[in-house]
Length: 149
Image 1: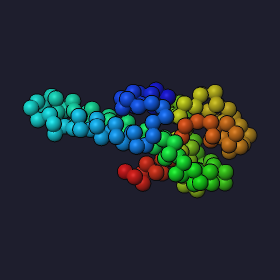
Image 2 (image 1 turned 30 degrees about the horizontal axis):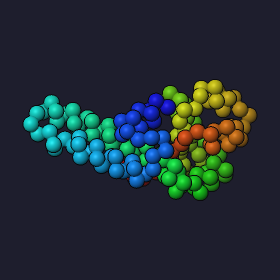
Image 3 (image 1 turned 90 degrees about the vertical axis):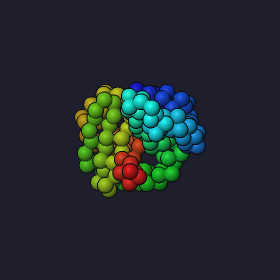
């Protein structure tokens, strides 16, 4: 997904960056781009505010999809994807959002439109998703995003 690539490029981290590296890079960039450092010019301050917002967004997004973050919630994710049924799903720009009967919601990234069409047309969307989506695409929990913000 372009968003993932762009955020990694913005922070200057590789695909396999660990949480500690993300945190270190994030802190360094925030020291450089903190708006309080740009008091001399309103234009520079506004630019720094926008840049810092983008850095914060990128950091939180990359942390939410990091392997360590997913490993921490693997038990809950596995329970949801194996026992809860799909209550709703939405597809937009290669991002598939799936809501489950247990109240959890997940986003899956880089899902091809063809896979989404097959999900819509499947006799059992849950079975199709277990076989072709849940363990095939990068995902993040939307419930954890709400809980942490």
